[in-house]
Image (cartoon, rainbow, N blue to C red; front, side):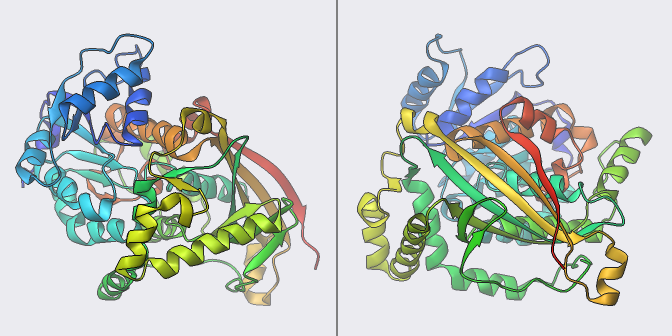
Length: 454
């Protein structure tokens, strides 16, 4: 392990690995907006992948209609650890877009930790994230390497959205639970790519390994939340506050949020930066003092009950077929048939990407006076609804988030923790990430404050 290499001069500020992939090419397009702009810390950038010719095609596509800039195109393969180590030694930050991450992610993390390089990715695979934390957290902290997964739609809108809702509860008020409701909207069709489907199928196929990993790890600290745990509620819900039907969404978001809340419980003032001044320390401590933990879950919504039936059908199909090899093969060979057209080998068209948007409502139920909640076993008496909304989640919102996290990391590294395998919320929460996202098309809004019936 090359301790302290993070402070050394590197050839590149950032390298995008998997730049020619479904999401990678959109990450390249977003990165070019900030390359060498006056206020941007991103001055040098390289693209990496298995095929230089595909990287060249990606660069031409991403820079169109302008001519492609003369970026280095580097050959690296996740099956060749020496190529990854060589690559990571040349850059301050590696942006990993090569999925499924349970198959391809660990060698990249290992190389970055070995070379003291900071690492961000866009995975939404909980087992991969928790495995990397178990294997590399202590090594990364010692090496000065920040390893932060889920820096895309999974799971930054959930993390920052929950923090935003939580900070609306002014003491002595406090939330008991916050439920996030995701609406995917488009004038055309919502379509995902094959790698995303493959990640979901592999997650189902290997759920036993994930459960075994969780059982083998020590329990993290649990936050103190006022009031009793919320009831499970019905499988299908009509959420009157937002006028939508809803069903639970199997998602990485609650798991990532719980890891952030555990870190905050263990470190009530947040994680100290490498070289913070007194004002920065005070700002961090004040920020986290206003964040109140809550039970958290995610549901997907539709305006019609039929839409919910379609989501349930697809979930059951993936759940059943993902448990045996032949079913997995059918799902991945014929995705359009078995997912009702929601996944496609070729991914969405540019028109489908441009027409899609998302809304993520956060419906918080809690207490106007949390000091009485536990003692008197009161039901929640207050509702606060906030919303995060933005463009298409996989190819527009995800690159926006990844790049803004990268720019913060490059420009404000001394304010961030020295290293470790950490969540986006605990690292970027006290920074100006929310403002940056708002300036780039992702909105944070207060929708309503209501008194709940007794």
